[in-house]
Image (spheres, helix red, strand yellow):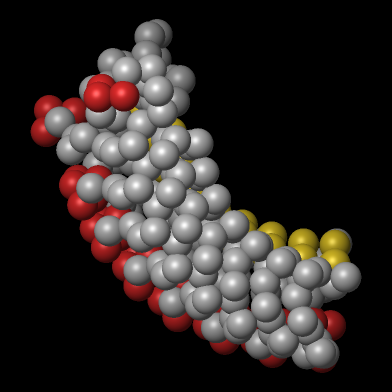
Length: 210
């Protein structure tokens, strides 16, 4: 059974009500229970990686204190718009699923430091991503992206941008505004050229194109 856990910081772990349905016994979870009202404010870190989850209940938005949410390696085709209510999130991993879209509410994660959407089926990224001013790591590798929104240039705290393994033929000139960027991975695309503005990435340590 998969359990939510809290980061260390006290003399003993705080007990948390499991969000995984007990119907599968020790097998991997296929659905989540709605969070218990008495414990909604206690969750800080929720690990549900490598299960068989096909959906996430809208009530996950009630976990207002959640700082880290890991849903990598499931069978999710979408996430509820209520996920945008988790405005305290620092880390969000939705990689390794079957997502085709990301809700615009993702723009409400103004405290987010790391966003992983790699290895899904995304064809686009919402423009609202520009609101993630604190974001330092953005993983979009292994999708079906044909373009990157110009708004990505607003992510001026970004250090790591992974775009490898998509269907990009170009990247926006606004990428040159990411002056804190240290790693940019673009291999495995269909790039015909790169904007001259890449020369403005004075902090860049690693650039891979092929």
